Amino acid sequence: MKSVIPVGLYDSGIGGLTVWLALKKIIDEDLIYYGDLKHVPYGDKSREEILFYSYNIISFLQAQGAKLVVAACNTSSALALPKLHSTFKMPIFGVIEPAVEKALATTKNNRIGLMATVATVKSGSYQNLFSKVAPHTKVFAQACPKLVPLIEAGILQGQLVTEALYEYLDPLINQGIDTLVLGCTHYPFLLPEIQKIVGDAVQIVDPAWQTALNVQSWIQEHGARSQEVTQRQLNFWVSGNPAEFQKRAAEFIGYQIDKVHYHQPPEALPDQIEQLISKLSIKWGDD
Image 1: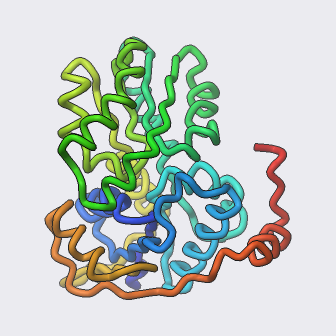
Image 2: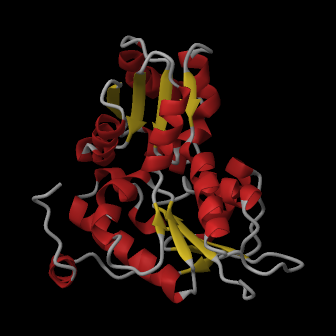
């Protein structure tokens, strides 16, 4: 591919920066990141709201010229992507399949723990995929509603974090897991604290790296690599406070972002959501 066409990715907030960092290190492409700070966290939103947010963000990234989009958000991957894959002509990658792929390659005793948002756990996306591709595997899912708000507030350690992690990890450890899937792209920011609790006997799976490798493979297989340039364009858009996003990025991944653009997303009003669901002929009964 002779032209320079970017790769888009999005998350409800800063969590997707873990995937952004993996993509930046693995693929040599321009990147456009969208953080939906106005609506974070997605984990406590309805499936209709998550569909609405995801559709509009993907549409925005498509309008920005993205050749593919990565949903760097487990909740969106679980609830929105199954309904949106056929809506867009460009490829859309989620983070659930890469996580399952990596976890199955890691586990030795076929007992796998899953930490995720309430919405992701309720969707059953991880559980169903594990059951489909490896029915002999036992998956123990734990919803972790306190973690994303703590991370978005910049609280990565201390009593609040420790207490929440013990609350969520103890039931998984008691099930004898040897592999733990971080089923939310925010959670790798708590990796040191999680590792302290689960110990060396439990291998932790961060879907970000496998996702980036899968994107790299697709680009290579489809001859979609952008031409070489002196410097790649790394653009950032948020629906919230750009300065706060810059601050968190510097704190969490050590990357100084020069410019963050603000984007005002459409309001998720009930009639707007209904219009979108009708337009896309979305039916939830087959979930």
